[in-house]
Amino acid sequence: MRLNELTAHKLLVLLKDKKTTPKDICTAVLNQIKKVNDQIKAIVRVDENVAVPETISDGQIPLPVAIKDNMCIKGKETTCCSKILKGFVPPYNATVVTKLKDAGLIPFGQANMDEFAFGSSTENSCYGPTHNPWDLDCVPGGSSGGSTAAVAAREAIWALGSDTGGSIRQPASFCGVVGVKPTYGRVSRYGLIAFASSLDQIGPITQDVADAALLLKIIAGYDEMDSTSVDTPVPDYSKALQKDVKGLKIGVPEEFFIEGLDPQVKAATLEAIEVLKKQGATFLDISLPHTKYSIATYYIIATAEASSNLARYDGVQSGLRSIPEKSRKSSLVDMFEETRDNGFGNEVKRRVMLGTYALSSGYYDAYYLRGQKVRTLIKNDFDKVFEECDAILTPTSPTTAFKIGEKSDPLSMYLSDIFTISANLSGIPAMSIPCGFSKEGLPIGLQIMAKPFDEEMMLRIAFNYEQNTDWHKQLAPIANI
Ligand code: GLN
Image (cartoon, rainbow, N blue to C red; front, side, top):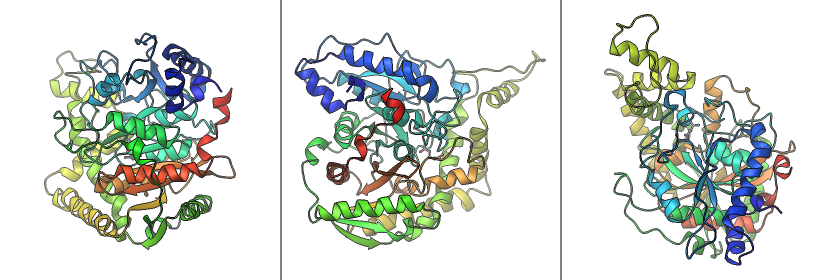
């Protein structure tokens, strides 16, 4: 196997045994990017001049990592894949980037995404769509589709993504990789370009669960620069993997086995339950009755917060500035309008309008406030279930990857988030792991959710499942050339 095909934990062993060097690994990754990125378009920028250490020093992890293009890297263009931020060079590092660097990691590539993380397909990028490494005609999911496709195509050993309503887990499921959304407050968002501040979380995207545990440990922890970051100790996630699942109680919510669920996805989920049963876990039928309101609630809260967060892009401080053509005398407001009209794509405009409407006086109570109340009901459902369950198991997405261009109607696109959104609304941790393939050869993802700050439980169940299956070892055909 080539170096870029190995997991981080295997590469670390090779590095410690002096069987390879950080440079060799970066070269292998770079070669793969050169080979396949033109077709996949997972990586939008590569930093070939990044400093690479000669050898491994104590406690350091000198491995390349891809970062979604919405996390600030000091001195490197960071655009959220939006025209409006083209040319924006952050003067500071996001906390996660600082943490990666402190651990010795090498931020090597910046990954494609839906503009401002609005989407489920990575089609809304100013750099053009990312293609799914398992079938180039299909989307990789979104909005972290660049990060998941890069890992699936072995253009990256591992990567960071962000998840506001499923943007790590849904593309992880479409690309056959592992994706973790930590508990809200577990990972600092300082330097993450904000989408919906009460929902956004950063998390790892990896080839297997052991790598996810490793990467989560590096990025998690309290940060005074993020007022929502929670000051609670970060456990050794890799250690948690060693425990078995005997006697654990796992809930399976009836509301997630609905009409519209692809029978192949359903079958793979039921098979996964059998695998875990054999390992000694017990399964309970549970109900999360407010699930049916999650999409409506999410699209009110997320668009409202997005419209506030995106108000700052006006052509004054950063990125694009457009002056209306003919009049030099045009007002400041004309410049704002022209910049936002030229700089934002259609999905962004749609959401800013929806969100502004939901927040406007006279409508605030009917939409945003009511949305927050329903959010509490959704959260209460989880609290109740977690009184008797250690974790919850569901499909990650109702379908496998769809074709590029297939979902031109925004509503049908929004529906693909139906299983992932409630974890963001309630703040709980959730992850996706590979659990099968459709007959068309497309990956299927299994979602595991746990109590707030109990990422250990989720990773432990995922690892036990992974140890008894081979799905995560399959390589997309394009990764092999
Ligand atoms: N697909 C969802 C949306 O479009 C989630 C996006 C995300 O998690 N960033 O809002």
